[in-house]
Image 1 (cartoon, rainbow over the protein chains, first blue to last red):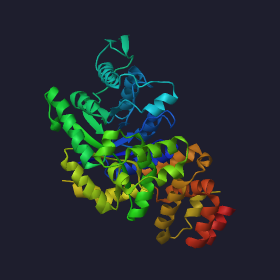
Image 2 (image 1 turned 90 degrees about the vertical axis):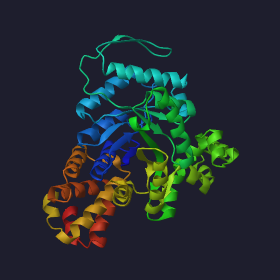
Image 3 (image 1 turned 180 degrees about the vertical axis):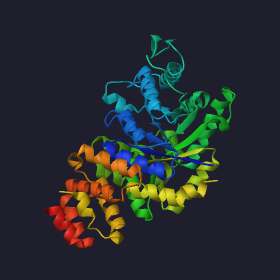
Image 4 (image 1 turned 135 degrees about the vertical axis):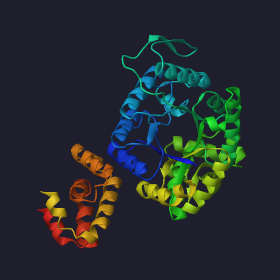
Length: 331
Length: 92
């Protein structure tokens, strides 16, 4: 049975995000992921509010990064959340995005090592009495909590590139694959499996999620319009190898990137093609979305995450997914 | 203004439609600073406990809609919902 997750960006006040979180739980979603960017509301504040008003949905940052938040603080935050929502806290860790990190004066230095060390520190801080760790990037010296963390917290690794995907397979309890097209997801699952082999595990031992840009509406045009801004950013930030996989002209993606950097939103969004929408989002009517999800599930994923924008009307989109899509994949 | 007494004036057959439209106004509003903190918590409490459609829940949503989107809400009550008495009571 496929599991469904939903991602919210805390760009809105906490009460809106929490309203949608309650709705998502009522409507059958299993996982709630909140993005972590310093320029939005704080992820753990948003998660705390969601935890207080929900009962069973699993929830966590999707994803935090080890550069802006020291792994010891991440361990503290997620253990505290797990105290408030016992057994429901989940943790997504990724390398972050270069643009956001740059604006805070941070470099994405050795991302694989940073994520690997972060995972180890968080695991040890939440399970051992005291942690002394000597890594390439992070160090702890007899670090310990003055409270006892509850149950083990599943760690998901957010990944897109081949090496990070393998690392995710090797170390993660779950993987968040940042893609929504079957070509990309199939490729990613293959890399995850390589990592799994190294840890003598298989796909059944981990939760592999397709973390998608999603937009649903009965009217295709409205669904597409809502997806365009997100797709513009994805296209602008995609490596050339991914663009080539979808026959997208890298020059066109670069033009979008330039327009976005210059704040020329209209120009950037106008350059988004139907091919880009198809490649970088799951977008359309319920029937169209269902067909794509079916294809993705065949690639080996076990969780499907509907990410921003979700739809032109988030509340209506959650209802549509619950009524038209989730029941189709139950049982 | 006692919003609970006001929502008692809304006929049962119009409650679901009214609630749905008011929730949309509140969620889509850009006037987020106008949402009183306590009222937001009241709404979330009723939503969590499936009681948004009862008198207390609907009263909270109506109060929030009036605070965040006053003109739209008045127009909704008067024109689309045909509830001039409710509109008048809110105005008072």
